[in-house]
Amino acid sequence: MEQSKQTTRPVRRVVIAGGGTAGWMAAACLSKVLGKRLDIKLIESDEIGTVGVGEATIPTLVHFHKLLEISEQEFMAATQATFKLGISFENWRNVKEDYIHSFGLTGTDHWTAGFQHFWHKGRERGLAGEYGDYCLELRASQQNRFAHLPHDGMNYAYHLDASAYARFLRGFSERYGVQRIEGKIVDVTTSALTGNIRSLTLDSGADIEGDLFIDCTGFRAFLIGQAMKVDYEDWSHWLFNDSAAAVQTMLVGDAVPYTRAIAHGFGWQWRIPLQSRVGNGIVFSSRYVEQEQAIQALMDNVEGEPLMKPRVLRFQPGQRKQVWKGNCVALGLASGFLEPIESTSIHLIQRGIIRLMQMFPTEGIAQADVDEYNKQAWTEIEHIRDFIILHYHVNNRTDSSYWKDARNMEVPASLRHRIELFRQSGRVFRISNELFAENSWIQVLLGQGVTPLQHHQAADLMGDEELAHFLGGIKSSIDKTVSGLPTHQQYIERYCAAPK
Image (cartoon, rainbow, N blue to C red; front, side):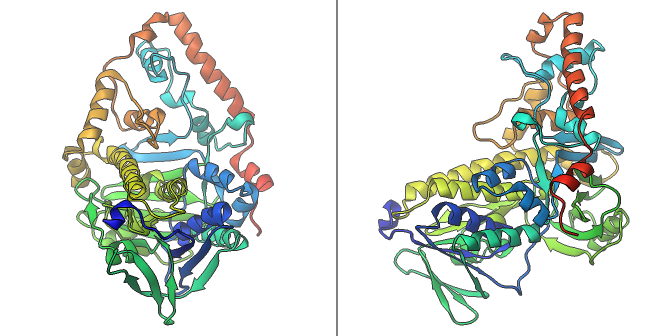
């Protein structure tokens, strides 16, 4: 009964179990904001590798860095980072049919109807180009151009070296007082009375006590899963992929400002360009292809000299049924995993940290906060899960059972409603606090082949001449802006070039 109300122990000692991206992002934020009031320790072992392949991000990371007052140029130079304007989906709708899911907005909405309705009518009347012609970020990515624009006029994210990012954040955190402890965690001591974690035992024999523990131990989920016994909900009946292989290659040519996601008959391949190398990988389902065949397909489709042997990861898509239990909060892979198709892994770490900061239990852990945290986390990842399933379920590929099975599977009712709403009326509505806005859903729905049967009647208030002028004005303005931008490579070299 005591735990259902509130623990009486104030939270002054925070122990982060595990480093990597999740651990050091948590350490950076906690130390920058609350470091003067907290004793923060991070335990990691040089002998335990990190996954380190989450090298593509989304624009929310730009805002995270602004909150922490991190210099963008310093961060990008330290992590070999490049800019990212979106994701090129190749062979997803069908073989040799591609589209780009870009950041930012497309066209101009009316208060009664989104731009897609005016564009849809324009297509019917032969007055409109491709939907992407009316999006600045998409057109800039197609022409390999980039620059910061006034008033944050260009929405962007980063490609980065994840291991270098963890090192960068470690230096940042240690300047704000975080103590790094080298060692392997071999045991977790919990209270027989409350079930809360009391201390972590290291291989050296040292016991590290704390008031709040943050589990960043990756897929092992050593605290939240093994010690706190929180169950895991498996989503593999919707998301077939359970394996990945990653390899780094030398950069050939200039780095492009977008991620490439290239679909195969059993999964998909990523290419993420950094300043001096390219991160490559293949995500696949072991039910549809042998590991050796998937790795061979990856190596047959890379550019540049490999810098390492392919590294294989196994995973289970899903989410912990609670990501905060007692005095343990799980971040990153310990909390759950969704494949990196939309680069959401680092975002989910960031959201977990921000949510914890907003509900930080300074004077004791209240169950109401724990319940709200878990509710928000679950709702958020369900929205992202549905968006990822969309990429697989809506397709026209007939070349493999993998794609046919994805098309024929029963999807969550929430996703089925969204697809049918857009198909029948062209409408998309963003759910409160949802990550992906209307334009993201529209780009992927159209890209995967869902064409609305009708458009909003507000578009009919425009005659052909007025509609052509409206659409042409947007396209002309975007084309003019893009033509005045430097190439992505030129901008990188003068703005944030990494040391040679």
